[in-house]
Length: 354
Image 1: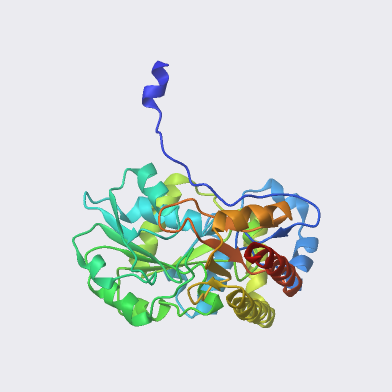
Image 2: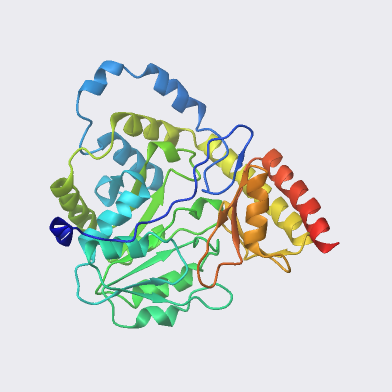
């Protein structure tokens, strides 16, 4: 059909499966296994439904100020979007307009190449080392921008602050995005580097450690000029990006720091327990600083394990991709969920070895 010649054709991002079955254990999309803070539920009940007839605040004033206060930066240094996906996509559209390729690892969040293709941005992937870490010198070639997820997904590994600073310092003429979706589970944020580098954009989210994936709240920190450019593009695209409930409930979640630290601590403790149990069963994995483990077994193919778990309504993530096709990304659930996973794997590995 002739009209198809004018269609923008891209290969879309493929998210983790979203099954909806009774008694399933969902460990495939890195969601928080615990609910948001109690104050979020209370604030939701107290919302006036008649307010929904009005457009939400286009400046997201309350949540933006709340984030600035929480992280100790100026309000003008904060950009808020509909999940970190929206924030990073907006950053791609805003900052990556050179004819030079942007750089990111070959094994990382698989939305980066989708956005690059969508916006017509040239890109080049830099191969991770055999230990899954990046090679900083790969990011010292000519480029139009850099994107580093730290800790990385799906590997779970964190690069040292020195490595991140080395890359930022080597690229003063382009914007360097540090995607910190998982930083709260044991990573070290690049936020302190904002004072030294005007080309740095740090992106975080409420979807993982703050248990609000369903509300779609992401945010970025940068110098005031960077954030102004982001807002200029946002307001040229859609003024009313974030709905009122997300703005109100997101701000409420920020108020309960004690609860936030409690659920993060639970997830980290469960992750460390799960590491020991998996290692005893013959699995190996990088030292995760996230809310998931990137595991492979010494003898059993990952695809076989993935399919066996699925039959038991236990869902993990399998990537049928080069270099990682024998790995499973296992999100950290509750203690009870991880115990069920480990118990099944004990029987499965035993049966495989016999």
